[in-house]
Amino acid sequence: MSLENNQNPTQTEEKSKAKLEFKSLHFGWFAGHVWVVLNTTVFLLSSLFFHPLSLFYRSAYLGIVVSYGIVIYNSYKPLLTSEESNIKRVLLDENAQYLGIALYFLISSRVSISLLPFFIYSIFHVLTYVDSDLIPNLAPHQSNIQKSVQKIITERFEQAMVLGAQLEVYGVMGRLVLGFFVFRSSILSILLYGQFLRMRYHMSPRARQVLTELGTKVDSMLTPPTAHPKIPPAVLKHYATFKEAVFAKPLPVEDVNDKKSL
Image 1 (cartoon, rainbow, N blue to C red):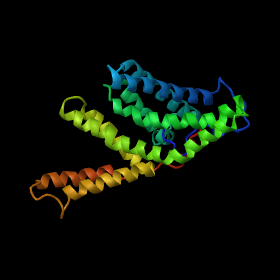
Image 2: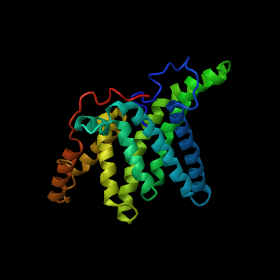
Image 3: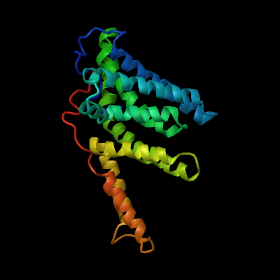
Image 4: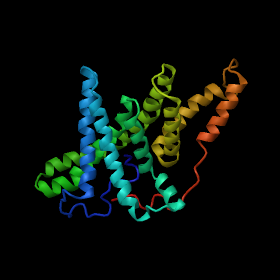
């Protein structure tokens, strides 16, 4: 889950004073992210030292789906009707987009690197919850621990979010494109993830920066006057059409991000 728009579902609760409720959606959201961190860690370790354990890969994605599903349900349950405007509002929420791409990776062939951005986001969601809810309620006198957690969040947050965006663009999409040429990923996966990145471009400043930098490098190779003279004109034309389609802004839905938090 992206942290850029304060998507932690604690916005409507008084974090520092609220009693810890283990049966609340808020705690379920936190537990989902803990599940993601634990299962991804086991999966990555198994991939590094012996055979990858696919069970933990699928299990991590189940945690991702649960966490995103909780946010979407709580944010839009008053609007979950068949009205077209409400459906568009949900679909244009970045949480729904992360939920959709997580569902796809859950049921499709394993793409190990796709877990890494979610892993990074979940770590910071867990740290934020520990700082705002667990320590104040369960260990209020552990100020040193809380300060250490806050320091990690303050000093590492921006770097982590940029890394997450870079992994989404270069890591995951790069793996899908390369996998297509060795029959390990489908054109459908590239199209779906391409649409996901297109929406990230319009909604995330960090993703926009990464994609813009990538676009500049590709432009230097495929657009005049710096394009290689041996590149066929048809390739240049198709690239221009593709670029225009990718960076075309989606039709806005009024107040699409007004109701995002738990």
